[in-house]
Image 1 (spheres, rainbow, N blue to C red):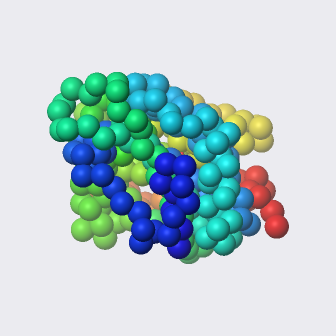
Image 2 (cartoon, protein in one colour; image 1 turned 120 degrees about the horizontal axis):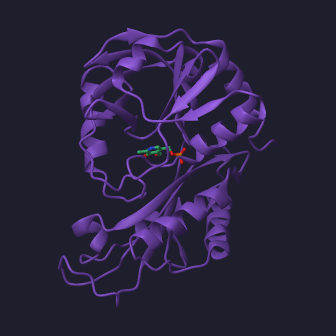
Length: 278
Ligand code: PLP
C-alpha cells in the first residue's frame, strides 16, 4: 500500500511525519475526501477548488497546483489499484517549533492515502437513525479543516445512542450533520441550511441542489428550527462517502420518524447517473 508524502510516492510503512508538524500540535491543516468509482475520482475539480478556498481562508499556501495534486492522486489510485474507494488528502501548515503564532515561513506538508469505501448499499436503501444534539463547533465550519474535535465528539455521542450520524443545531436552528449535510423534503420542496460560515458547503450538497433544480424540484436554502423535523415528509443526509442516504428516524432532543420517500429515491437514482461508469 502506497501513500503520497509531499511529492513522493512511498510504501506506507516508510512514511514519517515530523514531530513539529503544526497539524499534529494544532490541527493546523485542511483536507478533502473524494470517492473513487471505477478507478476514477469523482468531482475532483470541485474538491480541488474547495481545497484552494480552505487554504486561502486559513492563509496556508498550497505547495502544488491543482493540476499537480490531481496528478498525484491519479497516480496513487493507480498504484493502489483502487476501483471503488476513498482518497484522502491534506495539507498542514508545516513544521515549526510549537507556537500559536505561525510565521508564514514554513513549507506546507501534503499527504494523501487511499482507503476502502464503506459499503453504503444497505443504508442507502433502508436509511439510518440520527441523533439530534447541540452544534458545539466553532464559527468557521465553512473551512474544511482537519481540526474536527466538535465533529468527533458528536459522532461518538450519536454512536453511543445507536445512531449512525449526529444532526446538529445551534440554538435551535439545524445546521448539518457531523460529517454530512442535511436535507428535508416537504410537499416535494427541498430545504437545507444556506452555505454560510455555520456549515461546510458539501460537494454532494452542491450537486444535489443542482440536480434537484434541473429536475424541477424547488430548493430552499434557509435556516429552519428543529421543530420543522416533525413536519417534514422525508429527510436525507449527503456526503461524498454516503452520497444520498435517507434518514429513517431522529432520536435525542426530539423523536420522529420518516419513510424512505419518493423524492429521496428519485434523487438517489438521478445521482447514481452522475457517477463514473466503467
Ligand atoms: N459537512 C461536514 C461537517 C463534513 O465533514 C462533510 C464531509 O465529510 C460534509 C458536510 C459533506 O461534504 P461533501 O459532500 O463534500 O463530502
